[in-house]
Image (cartoon, rainbow, N blue to C red; front, side, top):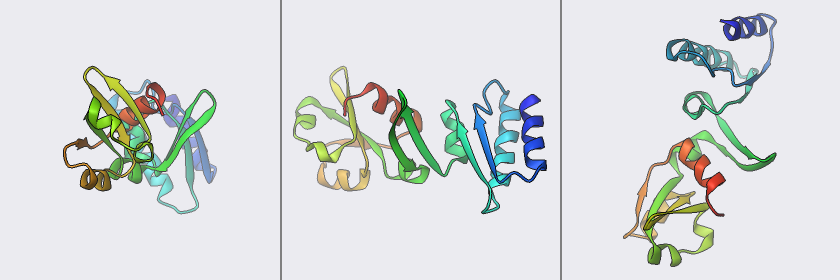
Length: 152
């Protein structure tokens, strides 16, 4: 309720920019959804923006236009959410397939057992060039894990 009240007060003062830090953490799913709907209504007006810091990546998938990943005080990726969700992918390679890739074709990778997960910025082009490699859709969580835990 405190977060809902604080957001309502900020909006009632005609704020053009909301700075939110973990605005939905600790909220039950119903209230969290209500808050996200409030945020979406706020930014429907072109002159309104929200800068939101969150570890709840599913919330970012619902409301963000742009996503900036920071790690240890550095920006490690800044992209539109749509580009991340629709163009990026994870290629799942065998060792010999991975070693045949050019470094310019991927952003990060991580070895997991007998396969290597590879973060691809253009899954359609990659799939056309590498027919034998499976490329799956990617979530923001998976992108974050590969960027932080993987090798670049």
